[in-house]
Length: 206
Image (cartoon, rainbow, N blue to C red; front, top):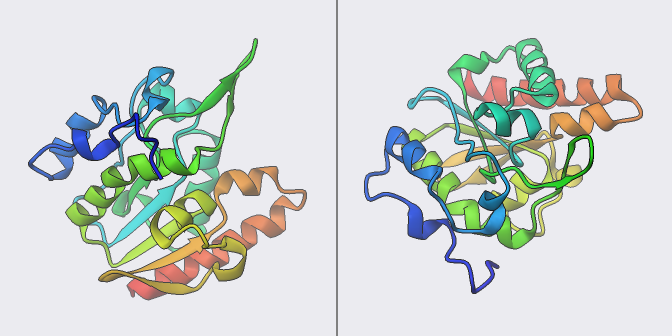
């Protein structure tokens, strides 16, 4: 649940909910404290009529600097996995459950920190507005944070990955986050699993 001293993103959503208006408004969001240290809000990107939406956890270091989702190492791995699965990334809408980068600063770099449950909940109105604007047929959820954001706190990727699940008027499919593949002791097997899951989404769109 959102902390009572923060208003959540709902207070900052514009009356008009098309993607362009939402994107312009997102950088002014003060619904949780993550904006204080981030460079900028990183909103989703892709066609407004995309049949597939891909949801990650939050922007990483490179995404925060460049203002675009999945442009760092995890994004490059995702691009390759999507291509192998027969999915054109340029035809998908790609976003994150949380729009600001949460990190722990060190002397040399900024270390990713997992968003708290209440921070994900505070940011959820942006994600819901994106889904309402796009009306996808399939939503791919990359990792636990994205899965819990839309499927509830009890959701476990390890139990339901690669399976199409009902999500309102659309379908959801959960799989590993590409960053988890990069951290895996058996990266080749983890990547193969990601590709296999993405192929389920690709088949659902055919």
